[in-house]
Length: 121
Image (cartoon, rainbow, N blue to C red; front, top):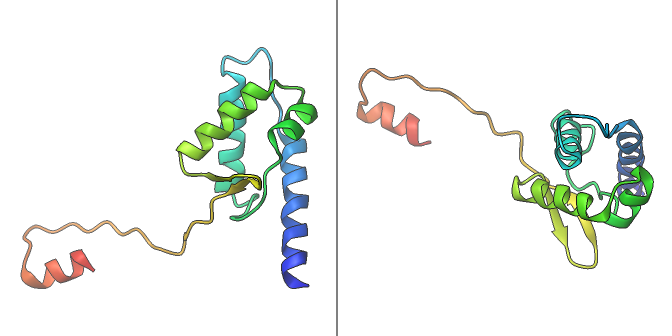
């Protein structure tokens, strides 16, 4: 039941994200870049969570009145950048990443054996 609720919640968030997505025909950015940027913003802001299923190319094309080729190029670019995964006969899904890892910047004037242990851990 909990997994169903989570999937349903992700579907609702996708519908909302799709509704908010505006494709501006006269924009200096191509439609592909506009779509890619919109998805990246939604994924980075956690509007679309890892594992969320994206609309199919046909559904997206009908909903936003954009050519299938444009959607396919945008999905390929998102996949190339590691934001989504494609599974044959299943569709496109937001990549589940482990954002719990911290990135730390270490500055050393000398690299002692103790500092090497910290650096490589």
